[in-house]
Amino acid sequence: MRKFMFFFDYILPFPLFGIMLYLWYIRVGDLLFASYVLALPLLWGYIVPGIGTNVLKLWRFEGKWRVGNFYYHHGVMYAGPMALIMYITFGSGPVSMTRVVTVILCTAGMQGFLSGQHDVYAVKSGHLFIDNPPAREGKSPEEIVNYYNPKYFFLLGGMFGGSCVYAYQKIVIEQVHTGSWYCLLLVIGLGLMGVIPSVPFLVHMKIKR
View 1 (cartoon, rainbow, N blue to C red):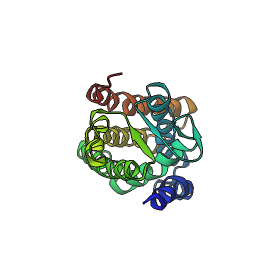
View 2 (cartoon, rainbow, N blue to C red; view 1 turned 45 degrees about the vertical axis):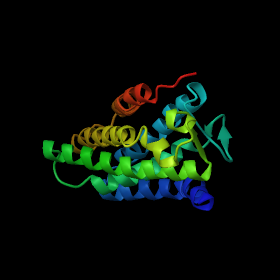
View 3 (cartoon, rainbow, N blue to C red; view 1 turned 90 degrees about the horizontal axis):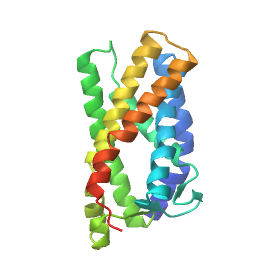
View 4 (spheres, rainbow, N blue to C red; view 1 turned 45 degrees about the horizontal axis):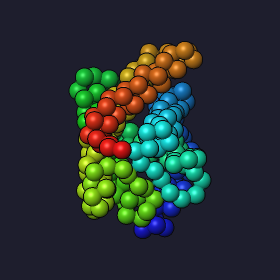
């Protein structure tokens, strides 16, 4: 299991990042949007886990390549897999309300399941330590992770999916290619992904020092 986690967390993220950038570009024919799909989880993967591990100290990672309690390449770890999930759930056709809802729900479901499984294996292998009531009571990795999942990762995936669909409408459909709009779209996406899943997560964790 430790070898599997080493491959998944240390080796796979780098080639997967490049592969997904290429696949998204081939799919939509727009490098700016392809970069957005990867830049959004890349930035989120540094900002939110960085705060959660090194500031709030709600959990920590063990192993090589760490800065404090999380990895130097933490954003890269999220970018490729989340872009892959988005690639599977994105669909095709005009941006209708039906498509928006479908993408949000499908992305949320896949993110909730896959990230939850990753965290269970990470806890079992000793790569991830979480400070929550089940962990302090010595319960199983499944109980520790299910204390906050699938709600947290479901919301995270949903916000990512919604952000990408909106960015697709602006960048690809409306051909808005200005740097200011690109930065604004990233800020909106980071705000949705950072705040909406984190509020119930922090409330539910109920950390008692």
